[in-house]
Image (cartoon, rainbow, N blue to C red; front, side, top):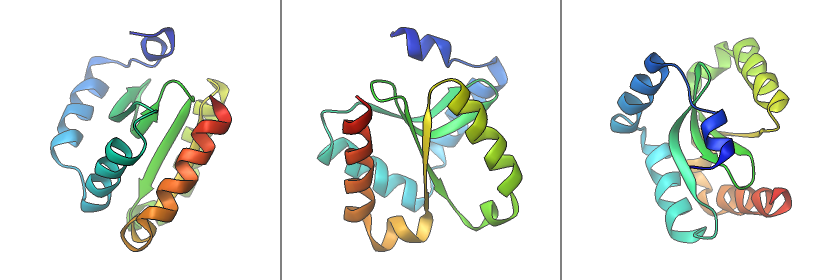
Length: 122
């Protein structure tokens, strides 16, 4: 386990929540997970990765990059998402956010942006 991964482990409740979320991934999350594994093999992304009290949809330790797939509920959680993104940025982790609709309608474009950002941060 790398130093970054150890630094991002979380409390037992967060780890348990991450395990639950891995089993209940949304369709856009499953599609993006499949695409990342198949079309971006040079980057190892983890899904539903615990980080402090948060669970990151996808995390690449080599690039210090978090990728979030936001559903409609995030329209009402803007301040919470901003706090989370600032906390991650304080740890050197950049967050890319995509709407679930963008993942479903433009998976290739979303994947391209993620890979470009990861390459730029590696």
